[in-house]
Amino acid sequence: MFRRLLVAAVLFAGTACGSTPAEPAAPSEAAPITLGFSAWPGWFPWQVAEEQGLFEKNGVKVELKYFDSYTDSLNALATGTIDANSQTLNDTLASVAGGAQQSIVLVNDNSTGNDQIIAGPDIKTTADLRGKTVAAEQGTVDHYLLLLALEKAGLTEADVKFTPMLTDAAAAAFVAGQVDAVGAFAPFTSTALEREGSTAIATSADFPGAIPDHLVVTRDLVSKNEKAVQGLVDTWFDTIEWIGANRAAAVEIMAKRGGVTAEEYETYDKGTSIFTLDQNRAAFNGELGKQAELISKFLVSTKLVDAAPPLDGLFVSKFVEAVQP
Image (cartoon, rainbow, N blue to C red; front, side, top):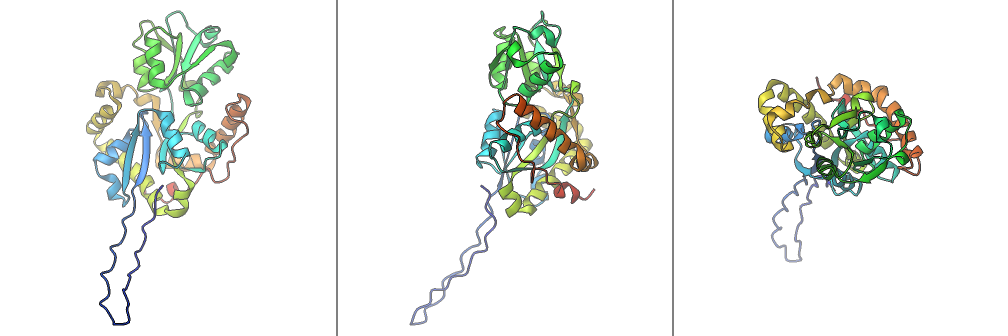
């Protein structure tokens, strides 16, 4: 966990014979904020921030930690192993329902097509999934997308053979023909679509606003070091500005982190809508609360959580409100 900078007390070795005072203890250094992220186009800008020294510019010391498994990053934040993480509203609500003390301080983006249900050549619609084997990472956002798509088609999870797998493994299993369909997010959608005749039969574009992505921090960090949280939020907007002015260089950095070519990375652009500062402020003033209520009801109805998570303290808007345009 993050530890605030402590001011070291100056200790004196006082004795009856008046010995010389000891040298003052050196001030302890603040431990860095540990910020987690994983393979999602809306979170790769953090890699740009690190490589361009933008965290330091905003006065925050950060240890950026990349997780090959998104689920591992969720668990790390929920257990306090890291201080901040990049994750969806859906998964944050699930963590809070389980007792995690977390706050959302920034909207990175909305998924507008980069989360997909991809099926083999003989499956043309979501309704065609009845009786088919579908793989996705259980309890995460693409599992949620699958349930939304099934509900829209008049089906439930009981109508398919759901196979829980980590997203990279699920995409690979689909390409190998071991499952009939897969729920995946970019860049793993590119892997899944390598299967001949495969196509996306449902995407997050079909459910506007259902999958927002966020910077989520522990409430301990918010209470103990607001300056550091503000530094993270300020860094994000500086990074988006830098990317806008240096698009080619930024894409190279993000594509490398994602393990894809720059050309492949550019194809993800329309499927992820990065939020501006104004969009952030508007979202905190209404839309996020509405989505949280809808998602909470859905999580309970599908028995992904036992009870709706408490929303008090979940959305903390003051950091985006304090950003200087």
